[in-house]
Length: 434
RNA sequence: GGAAGGGUGUCCGAGCGGUUUAAGGAAACGGUCUUGAAAACCGUCGUGCCAGCAAUGGUACCGUGGGUUCGAAUCCCACCCCUUCCGCCA
Image (cartoon, rainbow, N blue to C red; front, side):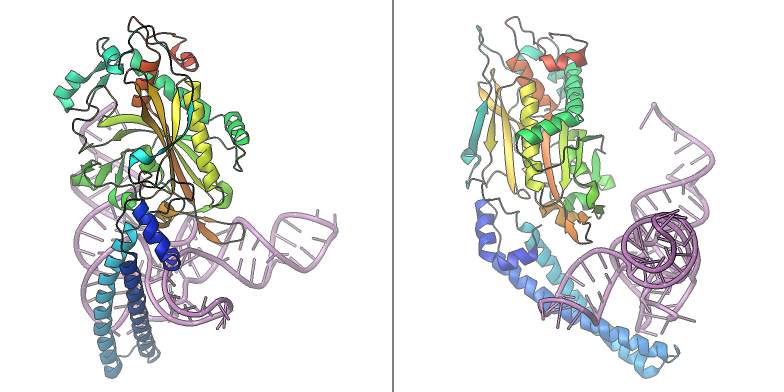
């Protein structure tokens, strides 16, 4: 959530920018609730003070029940209960209004009212030329039994697949490649220097996080999209995570991290689950949009000062990874409407898919400033003793399903095979072709 | 799933209705002493929220949420987590 003090000081700006992001919020009502809340709170606190003073008097009298003081205590208690109930009601409303306010977009985020207004920042790489009609990934993979969706539908329903054979080995190769790359300080250092960033060259630590999480931290992360998007295990108050990000960004819930530990950089791997309600009929072929997919996700905790540079580093890493695989891509600066509620800035990378004849989203990078950390209460203690909220960043390293779709379509041969990108071959026993 | 024991500040650990503004110890930080260091000694040492320019004052927090009471870390209820044993299991 946003800092209430910031909202008080910049009410008009918050109202305008929320609307630019497509969120209907009532800042005026929020501020009214805020004032009411504070006035009720001071009433409650002075009643508590009275109660404590009364208790002290009884204590000083040796704990002997003095009828008058006990009676007085009873009266205060009743009054307090009433005041607390009133405060509780207002606080509940206040929090609802406060949490409805999205994060403010940074100054360079284009204003737009639909995803069509995202801006192509740059286009990189050359589209491959084929002397035959390129196929879509499923037209290649299904006949060769690398993907079996028919049987998966029988067993698990639509939007599930059995991934098989060399395609499985390809996925594991990509994973190994990413782990090696992000674990290599020389690579991080090169990207930091090339982009003129003022951040550490610390490599990423691999993490296998839990794939389920509880409601409380999930809500605090501002990443829980209602039941339409996320699977709920009702019986156990658990949700299936929709990205490793969700169990990574919540990791330091309610903690204060020593500044020397920052930045904390993780590369998490998790199977991700999404209900995809409301997408019926969209991307029904192949494995572009699945209920279950594997993903490698970067998560960074940093100081406020380095947050933006960490974001730029994450994007640089994404581009580097895609370039290494030899995939043509474009970088999209997402507009205010598309960056998402908790995010201050968002970048998408779209890889060229020759079979489909268009660019498709394969990566996202989100800079969340302190919006997520505020509710999660993830802070850092500076060397001088002051405590500030950390900034969080998350970014896709590879959504493995879509990465494979891109490889299959870009590296297809006339006879329906797939050339293995060179950087992946060491992780596939030097196999050059699938 | 069954049985038992536990969850207290950065850590260890006492407290089990009002002497708690949470004892004591360790770590950390500052200082005295020392050629320097160690040791010893002295001091500092949690996080929110509200008011205030500030100094400061008030208030809340002893796993979480309810309850009892004039008063709860302490008593009651529910839940969560940890440890050990049994069962089951990769």
